[in-house]
Image (cartoon, rainbow, N blue to C red; front, side):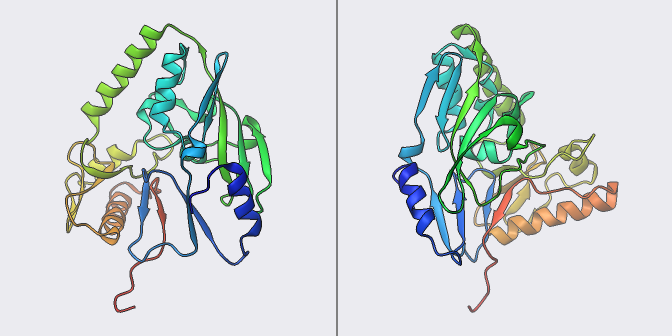
Length: 267
C-alpha cells in the first residue's frame, strides 16, 4: 500500500481490520525479506512523505526522504551538523526507528521531535526524550509509523559542509563494500567492542554459504554474490554468530531487520 500523504495513511490505519498485520518498509537498506514473503499489508511511503523545509537552523523532513538527500539539502541551506546522514543508507523514518548513526553522531543528537501515526491512525508528536533513543533503537511502539521529523542543525559555511560530505563519501568508499548487493552493517556493536573485529577474530572474513559471503573488505557486511536466497544470507549470519560465540563468548545481535516468513517447500 502506497499512501498519498499522512491523511491518506491515517484513514487507512483507522479502517484496517485488527487481525491484518502491517509491515513498513523504506528503500530496503538494512532489511532482509525472507523467502516466504510478508503476511498482511506492506506499507511503502512515497512522494507525499519526502518533502523538506528549512526553519532557521532546523530542518523538517518527511520520513521517506533519503538520509543523503537531507544532508545535501542542509548543505545547500548552510546548516551544519547533519553531514553524518550522508553516510547512512536509507530513509529518515528508518533512521529514526533505529537511531541510526555514523561518523560520530546519531539521530538522538539532532532530533528535536518526530510525528508518528499509531495503529489506529491517531497522530502523536513526540519530543526527543519521549522517543527514548538508545543504541540502534528507540522506544516508539513498533506498530507506529513515523511521518516526519524536526532536526536541529547549526550555522555553517556551505563550502566546509560540502567538504565534510566529500570526506564522508571517501571514507565510506574506502572502508565498505560498494556497488555490490549487501544489506549494510549486519550486526550491532556489542558494549565495548566492534562487531567486525569479533568476526575477524573468529576467522569469518570471506566465509561463504552458497552464493552468500562475508565481505572481504568489511566483515560486518554480508554479500549476495549472485543468486543467494534470504535463507542463504540469514543462515550465513547465524554461522557467523555461532563462530563468534565460540571464539569470544559474545553473542552478536542482528542489526539488519529481518521480516516475513521462511519459504516452505511444496507449499
